Length: 469
Image (cartoon, rainbow, N blue to C red; front, side, top):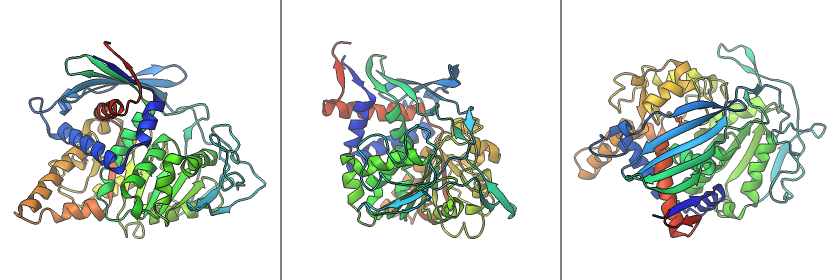
């Protein structure tokens, strides 16, 4: 059997070539696998939870760890082995920061102070992003600096909103490693690089519920790495005509600027950034003089919030969403960046409010009372998710996305058969209510998406093939 080898460059090129229809097909297959994970049995499917062993973590050099993630589908077996930073060596040194907004036409509106330079976790000059030659709209930004910004704490009294703990400049949480795929008989048929695959499959799962939302006018992204990039790209591919504003919040302005550089200069992004003339981007870096005001404004106005950081502290105060003003509109909030019990992106009070009595969404077998937080894996989330553990949530307050999709299927079938109106509460919640999604990642996602990417690579003659391996 031939062995297909896909480097990260191969995978990135393949992913950038995907059309909206391609993404929807991949997302459908992933949703089916997650549905089978939550509801299937060993007799009915290879994707069932029984066939997905818990991942193993072992310490690695330089304060890193290596994860071994075995998984199975009905047609493949797989093992992803990746090494990533553990973020224990964190820095709370305030970064110099800035705010800038852009429209695809190249017009900009920056608020800055030219007396300061931004600290960069990549070591590059913020006014000269790495990558392609800087364009005129990105090459001459000046930055503003301040020490701390004040906001209200949970008790309503002023409190300091300090720099969120994040990785030191010499660390990264981008996984480095490979995914090995074998047939159901154990014959190896593919070897894939992990970084872009991991970011893409995470964003693909994160946007499953995003596609159901009634309003996606304003998107807020925390982070500026690969995860953020793929959340932005998939959001634009899936709902680009309806999106008017994308706000990016990141500790390092230079890294966010590099992300903007990719979006504004890459040919692969041109059709996405120009398809909607109303689309605008903005970047805000922490410790900017107006950071607190802009952060609160962006959170309150957001229709969807994608958290893509390895943060140890909440990215914004709980009251932005929990007080009466913050609860006036529904939002879809996805938390995919934190993966350890001591990491949090969303304040635990937000999760507590989501499951409190009076926010009742009886749409799965666990939640007889109260609301729910949607997760990728109940067992893995209870063990690893810092937000869930710190909020003190129990399994009855969580619902797996695969199980939720099962209920939605039943409702849609009921409507199609004309036997009833379906569960109106479920539809209203999913489309316009406050939906929180927490993911710690599953090896099943890698194997499912990896299978599809190998098939696409073979169709498009991408990668390297070793015959008779």
